[in-house]
Image 1: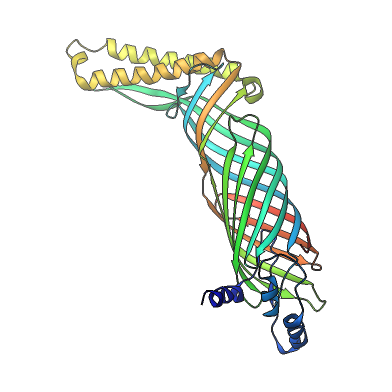
Image 2: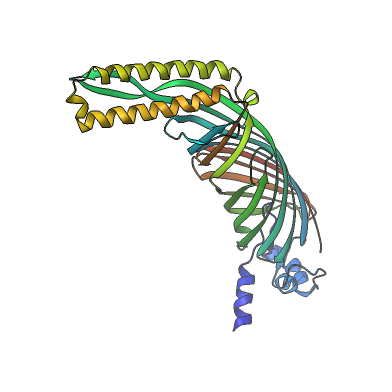
Length: 372
């Protein structure tokens, strides 16, 4: 019973990896001779396990091992929160309410190298080594209580910007990882559930960034008249999840040109807000200063202004900035469309593009396969 169940799985198996190679069920009256040939020919390679059984069932298996090189470009919107910032390796200030990010975008250009092999006819395993050039462009503002006004003796205020700026950080990264692709299909159609885990080392970060990618793809293969030559097309999704915690250190003069002038202007605005709050408080009658709502408004406003002023004062003397924050993709999913041209059983060319959601991407690949 167990053996029969495994054979049923094998009948459904179609191998499709990140480079979209797969086994194809040979069908049709015009292919009777090829089907008969497959059923009697011995399978010459060690992998995949059960490869000979599957070949004798009429599946044309790809070569069991491969090497691929892929160029990857990606642009994605990210969200940043839970920010803490320090200067010159000093105290970290919790600035999530004071510093607000309006736009944050990450762009990657890289090349990855992927060796792979088929452990089973329905399971591909591969490794990942990648080098990439990256940049993160961020627009942000420093906010403090502003637009202070008296209404019936009460202090009303809202948050206003005392400093608006932006920066672009550029850095190189090295990534290592591994992936698996369980698949199934029949008659040239396939469903592939690609999953991979990578660890990306960036010199400016205290620890590697961990990323998990899940990419379901559904497609079909079309055979050309020339033996071994075909084209595959697919659609699917692309989901990215990364560890949210990030910490590191950057030099101020490399991060934001003209930073000192911006900080001094921000300090002047914070001082102005302090004076406005003090004028309101000193203008209250003695009994009004005892009212809980006035005490709460005064102490809360002064505390927030104090935090903004302390952070800006530290920044004015800073040569380096240390940070600790949480980041994540604005949207985890986007839509993908791809194709692969198989010149022969050894050489394949691949192209895939992603769009919709908050991420765009392009993948171009070249793969060489051989028996193992």
